[in-house]
Length: 116
Image 1 (spheres, helix red, strand yellow):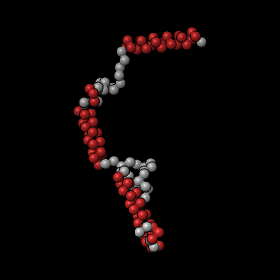
Image 2: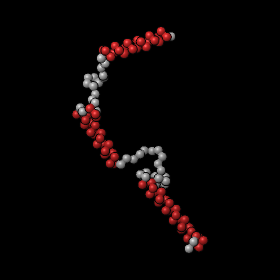
Image 3: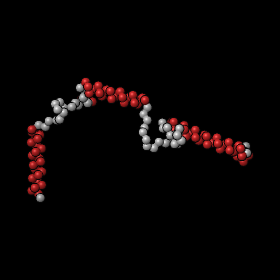
């Protein structure tokens, strides 16, 4: 039985079924891609908006943050052994380093003044 042998009523039902199948395929692809676009008729593609995160991913991120807070409270500092300098929180420069920087700056200004 070919398309030419179908009645008008059968053709209408076939078109309706085809549209229903396409709609279900869009919804399925939206679910499989992780977006909610299929349920809203968006074709499964998301443009802009906020991303959703799985509960497992949120739990991993929360656990990592709790571990960072615990390290901070325990005085462990940063990963890799590098800790913050003690004192008021600012690094101190030695007198020798300050003298070298000042001498280099004086030399730069002398070149500017002498060359201009």
